[in-house]
Image (cartoon, rainbow, N blue to C red; front, side, top):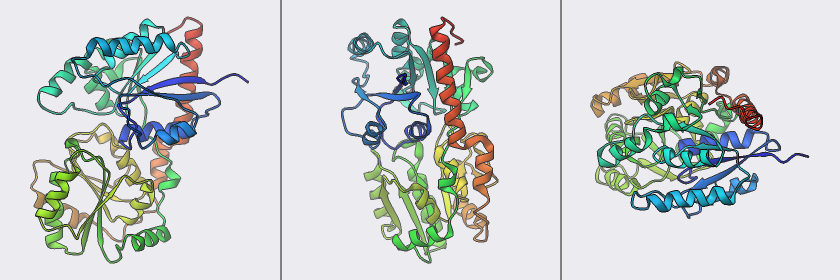
Length: 380
């Protein structure tokens, strides 16, 4: 039997972030007798998904994180990797800030290159400026330009990139059945978390600046003042978690905010929630909002997020210029306890966000470009 084609996926580290969760969804559902994923990461630490990657047959390699000062060492590390590992013909890069460096080197060693945009901003300050300069050449370097949405693609690859022949929107697909609303599961989970008779507001995301946890807490304070039985469920970890814990304590909300850490039972936790609050500063197309819609949750999200996330009528936009009190009133007035949460997962599935269909598409895409490369054809 022929060996599977090994695709090299590039990430900073494989913790439970949006892009990482997306690629793992594909990895679990792709035919691994035909396509196998290996990973290059920029961290020596053991990450959330490492154990599962190895169990699925993947290898994990490390190349030191780019600091600017180590520019030549960084390039040398990539060159040495490709000299040693001639088995790779396709590289799929998810680290955009240095993609113009490592994809250029990959091309010299004959690999087909894919760059993938998962966001719509590099943030603010000097580091954002450096990132924007570094990532500009990607549009000319990569053979294929992937993005989670047209907005994310046009932002990274240039205005009008979505009209180019080598541009692909790869939906942040999920296992829709897994997230379908289940009343029995909701009761069990709420009892387990001691959330009976509580108004549960949920959020999933790393504790990093773009997720805007500070505003999230300010909004929840306003909600809690009006509705004292409100509880905030915060799922995730991250560098800013300690400061958010301190803010919660300072505002006297410690008994009403639950920090769950990283969880493997996201689909069940969504069942336990009543609404989903998501005031991000910027996003590509968040997997969590697809999951929340599949579970039938009413969502209140910032208007900086692409309209492509509107798969159902459950998403409500709120302006980041609005006050926390205005957000709180939108949430409280918009919540409907009689909403039929069971219907939405079929809407998500029929909108081409089901992982089985998307995994098959990606599998065929990899196979086709691999076969064409053997024939000396490159459509990028």
